[in-house]
Amino acid sequence: MSGLAGSCHPGPVVAVTALMTALAVTAGQSAARCVLTAAAVLTGQLSVGWCNDAFDARRDMAAGRRGKPVVDGTVGVTEVWGAACAALALCVPLSLACGLWAGAVHLTGVAAAWAYDLRLKATAWSWVPYAVGFAALPAFVALGLPGQPWPAWWVVTAGALLGVGAHLGDVLPDIRGDLATGVRGWPHRLGPDGTRLLLPVPLVAASAVLALGPAGPPGRWGAAALAVAAVVALAGTLLGRRWERAAFASAVAVAVVDVALLLLRGTGIA
Image 1 (cartoon, rainbow, N blue to C red):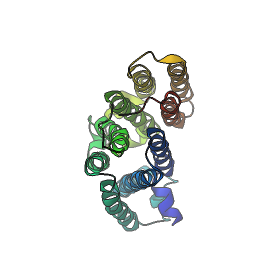
Image 2: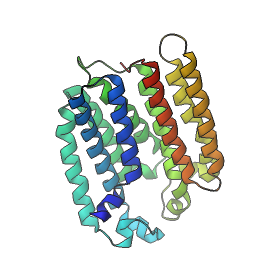
Image 3: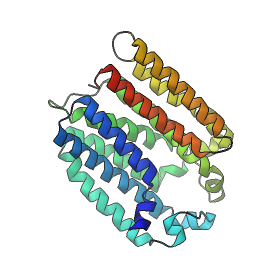
């Protein structure tokens, strides 16, 4: 069990699930629907994390990436594949229970993430599944509201931009090892320095869209969130020179700031 817990990429799983649960509460979903939304997002993220570790097992072993449960032998590849499929099987009915359109949108995002794990990670289009997957999450929350309203364009756009930033930050620490095993995704083609320097752009752009996209002036909360996001994103870039995990941490921190902005402004996402 500890091996499975470690191989699901627990940090991103917890972060994405917590942020989407907070967004569901902020958007005005009922308590029961918030729980259902959280369960759907959790199972989807678990399936993606386990699929990633299971599919990359041979590559990780070849690269000698110690600290990964499959590489360390604390869990077998077959067990991780089984967990990924079980989580995906649970994700489908949980997503559709939130509504047909909501479920279809969320499952499209999960399918994009699986496509990244299985194929697109090693191509120049590696950013697309992240953009689609992160854009689908706020859309899933909005479509789960009473009346199934379509999400506002700016919240979907911000989600896609955050996804691109998360992709850059997530891949940055592994670029050199991935290149040694033949993986050439978009960040790998940019190189470690190019990826680190580009990282603040989509993160700050996402916050700018959230601050300026809704009707009316951004107000003090919008201006403050944009300033904080810019500082955090730049700090992640600077710290990333010595500690590359800071890059992904900055992406998560900016996402927290953006959700807090939605909560404080009470703008709604639909």
